[in-house]
Image (cartoon, rainbow, N blue to C red; front, side, top):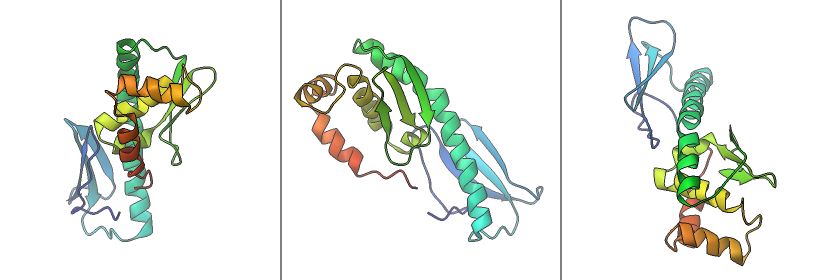
Length: 167
C-alpha cells in the first residue's frame, strides 16, 4: 500500500488523511476526533522509500497508541461480561498472530488488531480470554468460544483468517 494524499486507510478508531502543507518542511501527525492527519511538505515524493518509511512509522505509532488506549477497557469489559480473569495485558507488534495467552494467563494483543473491524477485535480478545480456561484448541475450547460468540466461533475464525497484518 503506497501512502499518498489519495490513500484511503481506516481502522476501527481512526481514518487517515495525508495532506501537503506549505507551512512545513517536515512531517507532522495529529490525531483528533477519529482523524489522523499527517502533514507533509509540498512536493513530497511519495514513492521514495524514505518517505514511505516515515509515513508508515507515523501510522504504526498511532496504531500502537490507539491499541494502548482502547484495548485495556475492551478486555476488562469483555472479561467482566463473560466472567473471565487474566493476569496482564501486553500490546505488541506481532505480525504473525493477532493475540496469544500464556499459561500464566497473560494476554498479548498485536496493535495490528487495530486494522480489523471492531467486532473482530472483540473476537480476538474473546478467543484469548477463552484460553485462560482452555489452553488448547480442543473441543472444550471451541464450545467455550461458541458460548461467548453466539455460536459463531468457526465463522468468525474463518473471517479473521482473511485479514493480513502486513498492510
